[in-house]
Image (cartoon, rainbow, N blue to C red):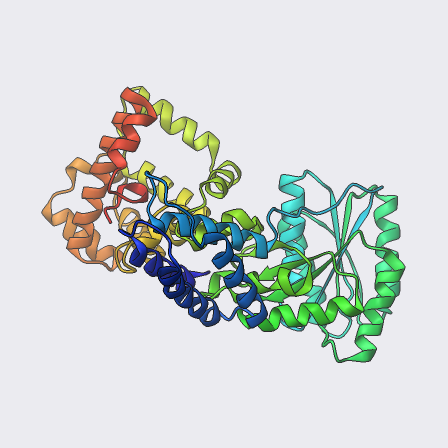
Length: 450
């Protein structure tokens, strides 16, 4: 997300380097590029105009501090204004009510409401330690009910059954009654997709809303529709009192216009981003962190939070104990590290959050397909070879390459990367994290050179 916008803004900032003061002339040229970048990202025109004017007002005539360049001053100004148009701070769910708290999911057909309902249920269960009941009021699409039932089982939520011959309002009220009996903390009501011009369907969701009195009414919208997402959210908000937005399919959106337009056009905060198909792929929306990503400054806070939630701490402790005990870092350990990285969103997810990674050429960093090829190479080794990589000679390398469908050069590269990781692990066991970070300088995750 924001790849194109980030590239354009980075080029603009580089062009300002070496100048001693932000003047009207160089600001005008830079803002022309920023304006074009925002429009190409499909940000709504009124939002672009307001953003550019705010940046111009704040940046004009600012003296450049001795330790800063004009580009860095502009980065600070742009960062502040990006945060401002997206909402300044994270707007969390308001669940401080007498249980069960009801969350109503609304949106167009195909926007990802059912999947988002399951993702939200998982997030609430795992991070907030809430018990969650999910119910589908989509009586017009039988597959939606079956889909939610399957996803509920996957994420550990209670599923309230419904049928296509029932009234959606009655389904919602019955689900709420059961949640009260079972002392459930949160009820998530998944509704049918509807167009804002469909009077009958909009009437139906208003009746559901009145019946269950949700504490949160979330509008689920596909980010790839760009500024249309903001316009649709605004129209829905006129009919339904929305409390926030869930922006889905952001992993497939390189522009980001919806994220930059919605808050300004609707006044409603983006509360979550859908960043993939899996049920764990839902992130809280933090405007400051997203602004940092757009400007290539990374998002280390989100990376640390993700590591806390997804990294297998027991496996890490076992590996640390093994290495500190003098045992080597073998191929089984290397494969475990690759699995941990994939669980955190893969290389693309990590690079998006690491500072400065946006400045690298697109082909400079391995992608997830190469990580899977590395795993295939390791899986093609015998148990002895994985435990003692030193025994892998030329004939073994040819056999491993044939077994994994790769080239011998790829096997050689993997063995070299393993040796680099092994050296880093030794440094960590002897000299702590400081030595490890110095060893990582100039290399990517898992010691892969850029």
